Amino acid sequence: MHSQLSPGVTQIATSKRDNAFLIDGDDGLTLIDVGWSKAPEALLDTIAALGRKPSDIRRVILTHAHPDHVQGAAELRRHTGAHILIHDADRAWLEAGRVPAEGRSGTIGRLIDHLPKLHWTPTTADGTVSDGEVVEGSDGLRVIHTPGHSPGHIVLLHEPSKTILMGDAAFNRGKLAIGPAALAADPDLRPGSLARIPQNLNAVGFAHGAPLTGSGAHSFQEFLQQFRSES
Image (cartoon, rainbow, N blue to C red):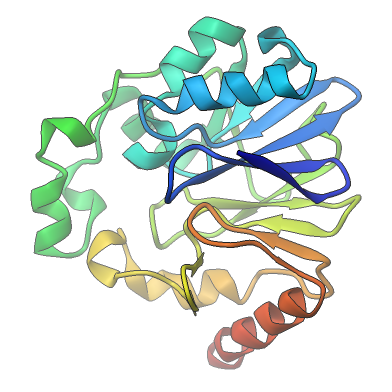
């Protein structure tokens, strides 16, 4: 299932609870996050439904190295040949195939990361992205480093459409929230990271939850204001 979030930005449901995003640019397609191990099938079906080829995916940008975002990355690269990019602070996790013990602040988070089903095929990154960078060939995706959920968590601003893709920096499952502290690497960093999100957005996409557009995007700005006040 897929839908247009904004001009040039398509939201793809990779499972009942997870979303990825596709950016259509002059230098092919850019995919934001992959999802669980079975997600590549849904992604490739969507690519076909859009009249494109797997090889049209030129790059994959991972918002962070948690299994529900990266587990299918190696398989997707096998089908597409896409380059995989991630922030340097999460690169070691991606290439190790799991979240290390220090990657969660809470005991519950540390325990669940021992489960084999939450590991993934160790995946070598083809490159890294950094704060403030506009990713080459991505149709104007600007990287904003938002540590807290993971050390290298990023959100991506599609500048042409003023669309922000939040990864797990915030959720919209029934209500706007920042997620359980126990699953974050450093919960105390999250408010400051959210305070860095730009204003005057037209659309907001979430890895988990429904997108916001129009007046919904305005309500997201109100949600962010509490973090700007704290920082």
